[in-house]
Length: 256
Image 1 (tube, rainbow, N blue to C red):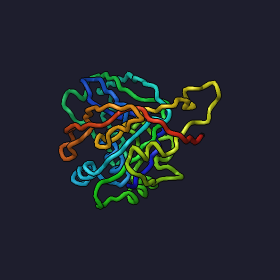
Image 2: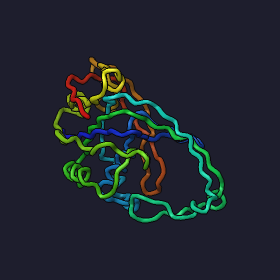
Image 3: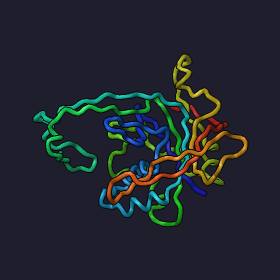
Image 4: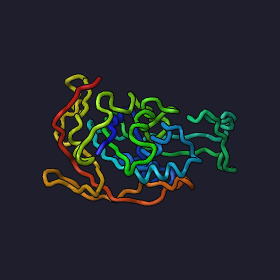
């Protein structure tokens, strides 16, 4: 099996999950739809390319781990949509202006709470089922030179570095969990007093496909997640099972 190695490093990350009214929560790990949209954005696909996005989502498999555990942050946001400036078109990463619609609701004051992860560093290894296009090499090239700016969940979550691992962008292994445990852990080069940021923990939080199971030497449990999307109708749609637990990684690399 071949897998791409991504390093998600950003001041803020948001992986989305079930939203309740004005509360926008974030999952602890990225979801299948999020990674599908990230790749589709890098490839230059648009919302109307829903057949491509749906097929990519069906083919995508991944495992992820926190090399440096993040800190949760809740951002309180309020906006008066009745201001004259809010009637103007908003910016997008698609190169086209976005106009607001929505009747009287677009003129009210809105309040909401958005959850983020801060100061974390994550490694993701992902692969694709079946030999179709796009393949891993095409996705790797798109991540090196994306068609549009990329963000990790929300538009405010801009990556601090290129997403593709600069040294081993593609790795081969038995399965995604084996690859994830073998890929070196990244730790930041910071002062000796900032132990949380150096990544000194022996066991790292991780998730991986449920079909792999849990080897006897590591701890894991089955969890149901709601991270699939109906790309044609632009709606959350469906759930799946994944394994979550803690894993050990023997090799570490210090990065700036």
